[in-house]
Length: 256
Image 1 (spheres, rainbow, N blue to C red):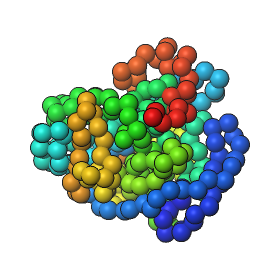
Image 2: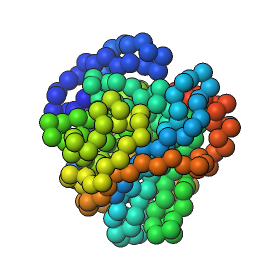
Image 3: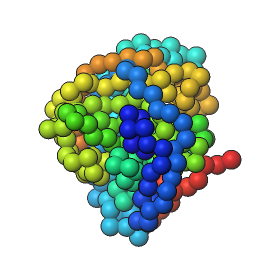
Image 4: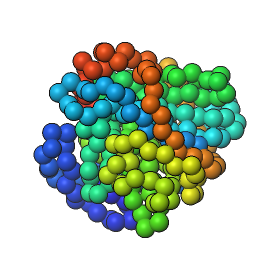
């Protein structure tokens, strides 16, 4: 789904097998400033079954966030969210590029994972619960002077990005082309306007759930950077298993 500023209701999205079909987005996006750190796109040298694309690992880090996890309150802690995805499944949706995670699951069914606090003192590479509340998406967008990567929720059909949980903002000169932001490895030493957490992370909106407890963040903001690495292993999943599983998890429908 393209930016809310464009006011576009009808769009053509390209699905995972290359066909196009009309799709209507449900809901309205909100943009509220908040907090940052690092988003890293990482190549893993494993081709998914039936695909020539390598798996990508994205790591999105906010340097200083405050909020609560279950009954634990925290202030000015580092938050890192890790995603595993297959570049073949990054969709062009009205000029924006999206990777979706139904029930918080990506390539091969690998869950989105969260590390919170110094050295994982609060959460240490913990997997999101396999529930519809953890539906998520990443969206790369282009502007006149800046490019952005948003982390947010899905529409009710589980097909497109809907509303924001947070974002990273970069100078156009520090990013690859918009079509490559979620499909290639790249580096930028600084971000132009830092990173934010948004209203979707607030309690009562669409926060994440981990081990049955809610992770809710306040609206905060800080500067940070983007980096990319090539990991030697996939967190929480065997590389051989992912090569066999392919991208089944990326196309699963929401569990009822």
